[in-house]
Length: 322
Ligand SMILES: [Zn+2]
Image 1 (cartoon, rainbow, N blue to C red):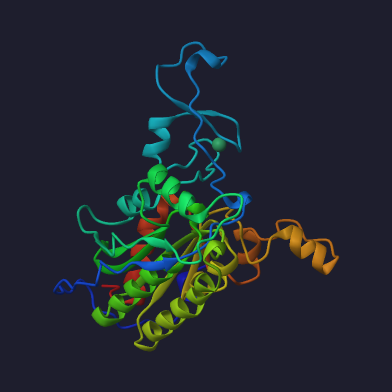
Image 2 (cartoon, helix red, strand yellow):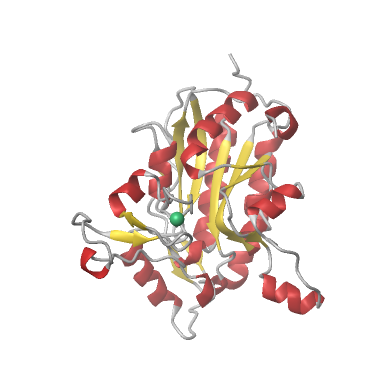
């Protein structure tokens, strides 16, 4: 599909203008809420395999990961260098928000916003596990404060307001902090006349936060609407998986919606839909490829080409084709 077919009319955003830094009230602590169901926990855990456990004898010392798609053993260093994409079959492994930011932005150009904003357990939610305990566990496990990193970074020649979700933190679920951080960075992009990019990876709303979580759908959508009214472009990047409340709000509102290959994209899960509609679901249902054929997604781009393609789209959308 050519650019002319998939891109909306050019927007008029400022390119690479230096702006004074703004204090955004990092001290604010937002009430927070839910973790996703158990099945939305990070699905792919790296499982180091020592050389002694493989059938191959002449492999060098180091850690290896078995590709779940083609079952080839991949040297971890090689996997990292290839942005967590299998060099044999292009399977896209789970990655982290900071790894994505490093690979997409120009060196030392990313300035993080609201880095210290943390969820609180407003509802004092308890169940099979208390929300407060889950938050502590995931902060320790991931080194993150919550499931999204936001800031201003440069991609090619363009400064961009960015939000990058991390599925490793409570399944990338959207609680009050995720919604607030995304809203704030979109508002900063609006104020500075910058394009916005949100990279989603989420099981949906954070149910531990109940209504506080669901309110984020409206808040983030409103911020994106104001951004759009200023004729500023917003690119939504979907990665595996992007579902439920996130897909029902900012992830599906992009002027351009692009996806990594074979990502699961949807609202309710396929089993729920099948039980509700009592009908057989078509093959490939809720995959990026299925949704691109039907017009929801504009382009499917491998992770290793994403920076180049985003840079080209920004050139086009910002009227800088040279
Ligand atoms: Zn593979």
